[in-house]
Image (cartoon, helix red, strand yellow):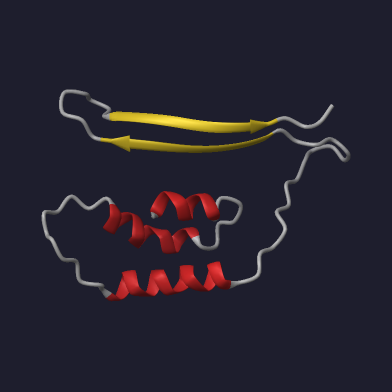
Amino acid sequence: MYGKLRWVFCLGRVALGALLDVNSRQYARSEREEWALDFNLEFSLSILQDFLRAPSQPAVVRCWKRGVRPTLVWSDIMWEPRPGLPHGFGRIGFVVKPPPP
């Protein structure tokens, strides 16, 4: 859930703070079968729901030069600790959209 919402909010930083509690819960290393919904997580989820229900705003990408269209890059990464690997294991994926000729 964290990765999907991070992708949705990639062009705006306002909702990213609310994702911290979601990230902590998602990647918690616990054997508990049942999780209680604490106040911070409930509040964060309500903020995220409000953002997702709001009408979408157009994305604005600023360039240094007027009239020059930028190359757009979207990326996503995963990482997990692995015994025996000092930096763990990870993968990265990306999509590149160059400007039209």
